[in-house]
Amino acid sequence: MASYSSSSYRTWRFDVFASFYGGDIRKAVVSYLRRALSDKGISIAIDDEQEMERGATFSPARKQTIRESRISIVVLSKNYATSSWSLNELVEILECKDYIGQIVIPFFYSVDPLDVRRQTGDFGHVFKKTCEGKTEEERRR
Image (cartoon, rainbow, N blue to C red):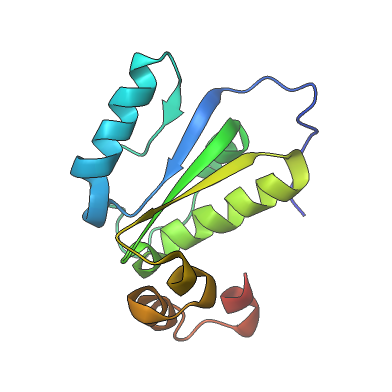
């Protein structure tokens, strides 16, 4: 298992890490979120790449950025689950929640929270398509 240290004595590099699928919300929601948090002096880690290259490997540096953030905001949109990259970020975020007490704030953008929870509706359809060819362990995570 990855190395995690207790959150009770650590210093955080970022106040907030934002996980999202750029194609859905980069210009509308994420730009507003960045501006609103920055205006309040809150440091935020947002991926500035326009799109992750299809099939790109989830990097150790990205995992480290997540681990060094006190709070993660996960913007769940209809197409969030089309990206294995986003799903890998989510796995790391949830591990940080469990192991270091990272605060996780879900933000549901044009998607029903029950569809996300139950993996139904548009979100579920996209998730199932993304999971095609994956092992049972990968789907479970």
